[in-house]
Amino acid sequence: MIRCIQGVRAAGLPPVFALVYDVFFAVFADLDATLRGVLGEGYRIMPNFWIYHIEPADHDHGFEPHRDAEYADTIGPDGLPTVLTVWLALTDAVPLNSCMYVVPAGRDPDYARSIGDLTPRPPRFALEDIRALPAVARSMSCWTQYIYHWGSRSSRRAAFPRLSYALYCHRGDVAPVDQVLEVPSTLRLVDRLAYACRGLARYSYLALRDAPDSQPILDFFEAQLARVGLTGAWSTTR
Image (cartoon, rainbow, N blue to C red; front, side, top):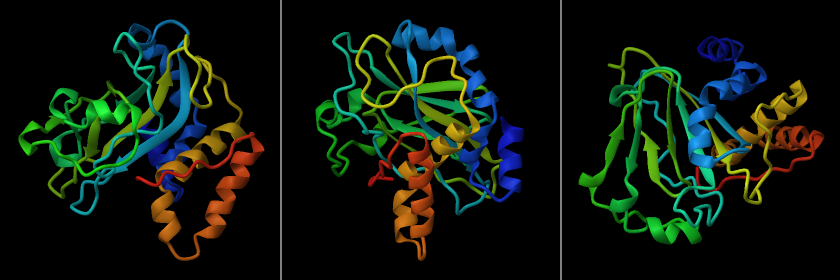
């Protein structure tokens, strides 16, 4: 995966275009037992993909503090998620190169309300309740749609960049809240390119919207999504 991302960046493309490579879908063979333990048999992929390359530099960082909060009420009666964020560390992720930071649900006064109400609100948690989540390479972290989290600022003192791969998975025994893919999934190149565009549309929309002359790029995203029967779903939170 690392070599794929490096090759895509060397070609001048955003890291998410590494989705054209098989390994980003074949990896589910290694994750299957854990994901079945949380989501049950027949879980599926939600193609909300993102690939991170955070430079070892003071200017770079992950996404700002947020809840994923794309779908309401994705906690089942048993308290387990029906939609699960899956975050794979491809390199070690440590505080110096932008590991994840989270507020545990039990220390977040707005966590319960956020399950049914996706409206963004100013955070009210105590700073001392923040937890760093350093991760070793080839490990998996998971959380619900409503955990408040972010990727910290990197540092020029970091020894290497932070690379990671994220997506959602969905229980198979409940109605899907968005498009889902079977596991394992074999996708055509045109589909993989469309999902890369979908990721850019969802998670870079605000930056693109405010950039000069960005409309042709947004139009290109829409055209690629339309080729596989999708439409743009722009994120207004990150």
